[in-house]
Every structure is written in C-alpha cells, then in structure tokens.
View 1 (cartoon, one colour):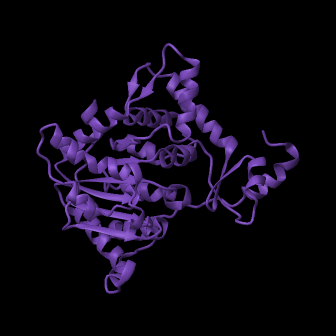
View 2 (cartoon, rainbow, N blue to C red):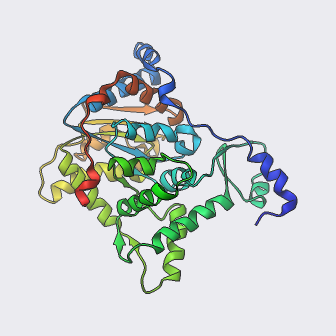
View 3 (cartoon, rainbow, N blue to C red):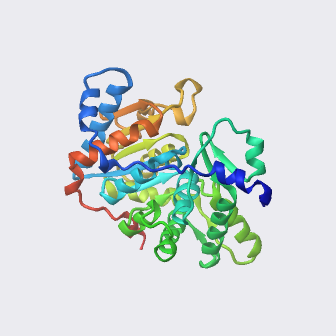
Length: 345
C-alpha cells in the first residue's frame, strides 16, 4: 500500500485525466480528401480510409476490428466503442490490456492519466503508479480490477470458457454494476458483437483468474484458446465476405487472418479477407508478426492484395481521422447488424 506521507505526491501526479476523443465532434472528411492528393503517409491514410468505407458500405461484408497496443488508454477508447455502436464493427480480436486493463478498468469508474515524463519510474513504483509511455494508471485501482475479474469467475460454472464467453459475462456484469456506462465491453454485449482475447491471461484478468483457480483448486473455470480459434473461424465461415481494420499487430492480427486457413483445413471454402487496413509503426526489417505486411499475408492465402493498405503511423494520431471520416460519410446507416454472438447461443 502507498504510505500516507506520499499520498499528496500521488494525487498530484494523477490529476490530469486522459480525455477520449469524440469522432462525432469534428468532420475529418475534408482533411482526408486533401491527404488523398498528397504523398507518403497522408496518401496511405486516405486510401486506407477509402478501403474501410468500402468495407462498411459493402452489404455482404462483415468488419472485424483488431486491437494491439495502448491506444485505448491513450484516448481512442470511445472511437472503438462508437464504431460498434454505429454498426461499423461486427467482431473484435484484441490483446487483453485493451479490453480489461483499459476498457473494463474505466467501466469500474477508474481513469487513465496524462503522465509527467520527468518523473523517475522508481518513484512511481513507490507510489504504486504504473506507466504506459506517457500515461499513468493507479496500481491500487488496477488490483481492484483484478479482484473484480475473480469475483465474476467465482460466480460462473467451473468449466472451460472461450475468452468470448467470459468477456460476455463481464458485459453482463457491467449491465448492473458499471460506474461508467457504455464501455466497449458493455456496448458489444448490447449489440451482440463478440470480443476475442486469444492471450487472455496476459493482462489484469490473468491475476484474477489465477487467484480464482488457487482458491478453487477442485472447481474452477479456465480459458480455452483453442475454443477461441474455433469460434472465430465459425464467424469467418458464417460471414463470407470480411474486412479487417487492424490497429497494431501481434497476436490479434495473426489470429484473425489465420481463420481463412483454419476454415480450409476444416474443409470449408471461404474467401480471403477482401478488405484489409493495418495501422502500425512496426518496422518490417525485424521480420516479426507485427511488422509483416498485408501483401505478405496474401502469400499465406489470408488477405487479398487488391484492397489492402498499410499505414505506418502512430495509431492514436490517425485512427480518429479514419473513424470520423467514416462516421460523417454515413455508409454505416444502412448496414444490417450481424449479431455474431448469437451464433453461440
């Protein structure tokens, strides 16, 4: 626990909250149109936005959003929520931090804070403040999040769950208990938009689930990542035409692309992902999953090369522009809801 003598220091550091951007409050269409007449990353973003709008406007296309990195904590949390609320996203694949440590965390009434870059990280540790680049989280509040995950787990039948199943139970719990309403998790619950977190223990949920299993050695739940893969592949098979909006890379990116290959292994004929946009700062020279290009994914039979666009940019600087453009162009207004969660009822 933080000593009382340092509480004033902690309060001073946790005084400037991160405010999440509202894509409805400004119209990015003029700047995206202007960027389309430029070069470099500007033109890449304009083309990516055009491809995303094409996916949204295609009546046969289901859109899958993938999230990796800390853009939710950094101010884009409501962007992703609004894409779901407006019907522009039909399923989500994410890292655990974006869903649990950021979205669920704020739904409990906690906040993220703008950080002072001059503070020593050893001092932050003494104050129980965690740092994500230039963003702070109160560790004591994060432990409350851990404990809440354990409480939800304790209330469920002891059996294997896909992360989608467990996150849906988190959404159900938030319907009655959320301090901050309309989180991404709760919005997805309301709209039957499934959320998958393939590495679910790699976040605040992991601590809560470990404690749940230790305290219930003979009757506890577990998270089945193979079931995640099977369920997401079922969505790809049911969806037919699909488009990807990928923020960052890593496991979520590869997981959703692999559904095409998995469906083929199961003997199902499915199309590659027709539309694909990735926004990343990963360097292609290191050969890692996060930096592999969408053209490379075509060699694996995962993505079409005709309607794909890489945007090498820090996501929080460009995602709001793409999303605002799509909101104001209004292609989402006639999209039918997919309600993929109902596949598993």
